[in-house]
Image 1 (tube, rainbow, N blue to C red):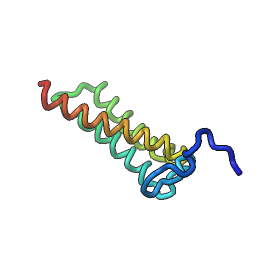
Image 2 (tube, rainbow, N blue to C red):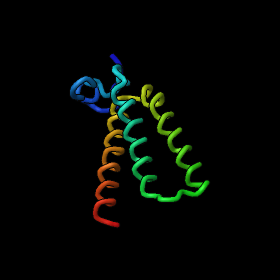
Image 3 (spheres, rainbow, N blue to C red):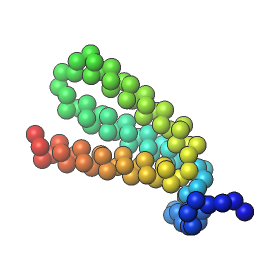
Length: 103
């Protein structure tokens, strides 16, 4: 029997990721992480009317990092992927609310 860092992590997940200590076998979480991060980048850059060369370059760097996050997320335990996806989702909502109420 393998050692689990905290009781319940190996059988406490939901839906398709029951074992939170194993990577997501369906790749849904990693792909969702990449999409959410990409959406955050696009949302933030949409507010910039005339981006400078530096801003455009940074956008491309962050887009690349969003893509690189997908294969990384396929290798980490699902609990880390759930955290990353929750964080990215929270950032999307937060950015949308800021854009809506602060102009």
